[in-house]
Length: 135
Image (tube, rainbow, N blue to C red):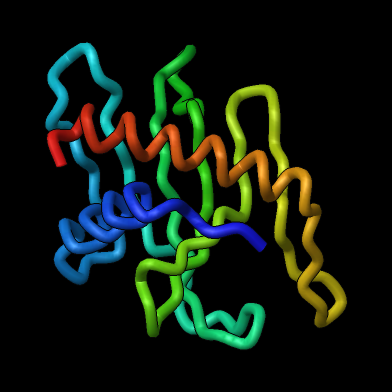
């Protein structure tokens, strides 16, 4: 199972810290040309691969015909004992959804190829977020 690289993990940690204990936050530090970033703590205390994790989502949204459309929305498992251990779980945008790790019938399942791809994308996206949100 792949985790975020150190730079992406530090950026994610800054995002969590900026939440200040709240369950959600909207960051818009990039000006009009940059889409705001939404951060949300979805659930806490999930047992995954022998550790305890909190689940967070990161998303950009745009409005189309009055509806909010994710571009993209990803979920991540963040270790409660080592916040540098962050595992990408899912990805979605307006036309595509994939889950790389999911819970089914009391078992965790993983699509290793999709999980690798999500991790690579998330590493790049968080690098961009770091720049866009002045982190």
